[in-house]
Image (cartoon, rainbow, N blue to C red):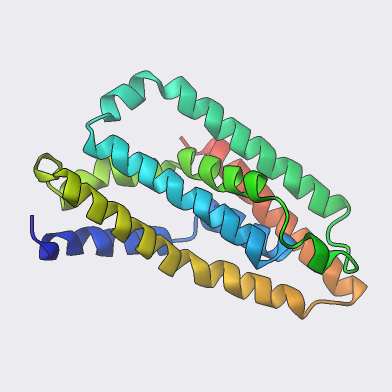
Length: 204
């Protein structure tokens, strides 16, 4: 494989990642509710989830994944449950402006786990890597060096596509300082997270 043969993958992944889904919705909700840093932690988990599915596809584990589908179902519902818990907390209490800057950097593992579990339970991600990926990449011709290139390209594309979403959401958060605006912000973040959770659970 030459570098030009990776171009269809980059284009396909960019389009798939840019289409708003539960991953983007949860990331925007995280950025609105907690700021850029926790949303960035979330995005790291999201990227790891994509790389996990990429690895499954390249190793030919789609059949094994279907056999052990119960594992993915558990991850799916754990992620959805955590998103609903976050949504409830933001709907009920939301952001305390006095603690906004203090709490902005907290919650690496919870944010990271949310991103990873949302991706692992996201039907769009599963379909892309298990069904669409073989149509843009000859998986039988992928060597270890090619795999590393695909991991690098996946990471770059996802950061390039998702970062503007969470950056804009976190910037918008800084302009909302009065109680009425904060209430709207809290409810918007809660709705985005809850909507992502419901989509994950209902989508087969």
